[in-house]
Picture (cartoon, rainbow, N blue to C red):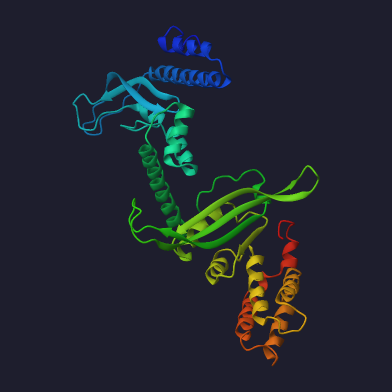
Length: 401
């Protein structure tokens, strides 16, 4: 049985420095930081000891791909890589063809560890650096990485890591999109337990984002470009301490594309399949009145999802009609009419609103300037008639307001 006394040498100058620093620590912060450094040193030592032990196992050498001769061991060669515990070094066997054929160099233990030639940084360290860079500027990510792991790297290194993983992710995405276009179902990871029993809400919208014309430079005139965004969220019921039942966001996934809705559609469809849209008991699509998004809904989600027009955008159109009609009716302000229309909409009486607008368009007392707006809003409500049944939607769950 392995004991700590075997791999750890407490007589080394490094340990003595740690011990003296630990003894001289007078504040809680310095004590914790020193203990943290000792923990990293212990982790590094244990990893090196374990790797060196594993590397001692005999290797069964393969034959040379060029001449067919069996490879021969050339002894142990050191390997060094930067990890979460700092620089880790070990020795492993290296083999080569006795005829010195080109590219016959073989290091089986590196393949077992999942590292490639000339790799100097471990994947877990690169992953942590990229995760920090998602939420922080590169300079702060580097500082935090140093505080956590004692690893000193440059912000340019983190930037290169992000670019590397980004390219890998894009290649993987392109392969999955190509397979989906050919009719193949994507490989889906198992969902979290009972996740398919929670409502899946899909919302989509577009935003304008400012871009500079020259990468890496602040010079030049800003150009706004459209970014299409979709959100896939799982909602979970929750009971507060006071006993009130509320709904909270349990999980969310974001899909964004610099381009039009046609570019967003396959990526959103792929992510929806990953999120178990085909097995989820309740799927809801929420969007404003943009025709492109509702065309996307009809093509990709109408068979499995309930389409709901965002209530805020619907009431915006009602206010436009009320404001355009102004105070034509004595004793009724636009605000008063809007409040009544909004109440009718929430209660599912959209047919009454459409009927009222139709009557107003026939009345001679209706201002000519208000008729185009009334006609446009009426058409808007007619187009989204199936998406405005808010009273019925309320029965789907308390989370629908």
